Length: 110
Image 1 (cartoon, rainbow, N blue to C red):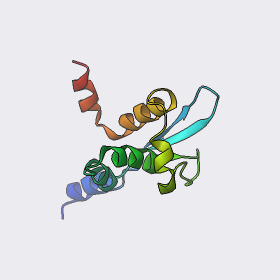
Image 2: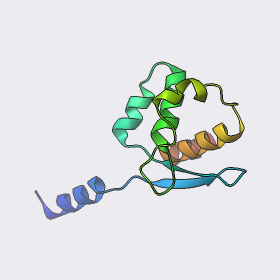
Image 3: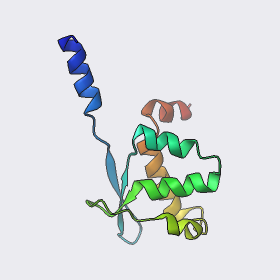
């Protein structure tokens, strides 16, 4: 392997997942983490839209600065009863920013 190839591989394969903290209207903070390519594809390939949306919330929402997920599988039914705006929309917007490449976001603005 060439040195240049090794440098490129090291750079690409050492990239870390990004995260951001969103603050809800009442001051509650939730960390939204980018998923890996494998997790993202597993979620996208989920045929059932309800399961896909719940999976997004379960896989990306964390108690800030911990590895503790906010939601778990047992929350599926409750997640499906959330109002479609407000907190849910803030979470989905934050998730989309972490999952969608910037080029797709820009294309959607045209």
